Amino acid sequence: MRGTIASTRLSASAPLDTAEEALGTGPETGPGADQGVSRRSRTALSFELIPPRNTADTEKLDELIGGLAAYHPDYVSVTSSMRSDWLEGTSALIARIASTTDLRPIAHLACTAGTKVELEGWIRQLIDAGVRGFLALRGDLQPGQKALPEGYLPYATDLLNLINEVQEEEAFRLAAGKLALSVACYPSGHAESKNFDHDLDVLLAKQRLGADFAITQLFFDAADYLEFVEVARMAGVRIPLIPGIMPITSLARAKRMGELSGLEVPRGVEKQLSSAATGEEEYELGMELSADLARTILNAGTGGLHIYTHNNLAVTRDLLQRIGIEHKD
Image 1 (spheres, rainbow, N blue to C red):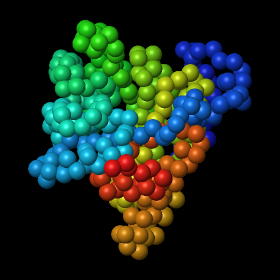
Image 2: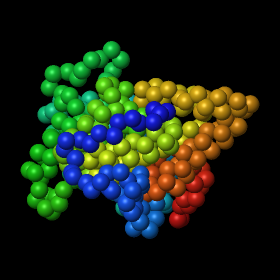
Image 3: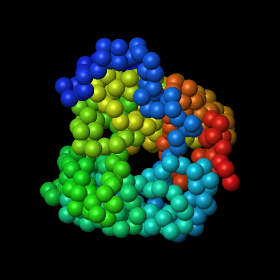
């Protein structure tokens, strides 16, 4: 847990608010108020999918895609990683989704996936495959790596600029519309950021470059997310900040995902999961912690959730059932 956020400074780039709005004392204020709380008719829902890494994974895909489609999500995001052949795997899975369902896919696009020239080609290829949205990321550096090689885009903001350039050139194909641009944000702080103000400045820069919404990286405490949204709004962030929820199925999984995100599992979470006498009990404790996290965020007025499925349909269904979201098949 990051703890109470001391900083309340307004960014120089922020729009001028009334004093009432800045202090959060007016009507329909608070962490979720400006995310559509007073007008929404249902909880917005989206899922992250991982391209298959082997034949066995591929055989399970149709069941996974069909099961998630039954929830009628607003979109699904498809990841990109070395273990799934980078954007080859992303493009193949998106083409499969587009040909078999009416799901709306957005593609993860990371600076680490290739040079600027290679990424430009992938943006066009993914548009050809039916993609109308991207999640623009810097991507994780390899252990010991200080920066990306020459010819690579160094930051997600550079990638947003590149997507915007391609979008302008492809305007006729996009029917005078635009690509949906999403980015990552970090309620518990980015592992490489200097401080929380630096995180906010980067998020504001992404907003100025056309980001339509942000999806949070992993966090374990609802207060981290709710405080993050409150301070981000005061700093001038106006795009939706969608909470990414990872179902906790074991302490080992939580620690592993925490390591990848540069986070430590909170002592309270570790203590509860360590108290389990069996794997089944550990699963139950972890899933209830995940459900409680989601419920707290929704009860605070947040309009939607993004679920990191890890391609596990049963676990995803279990989590959603615990928070009262049912599929419609």
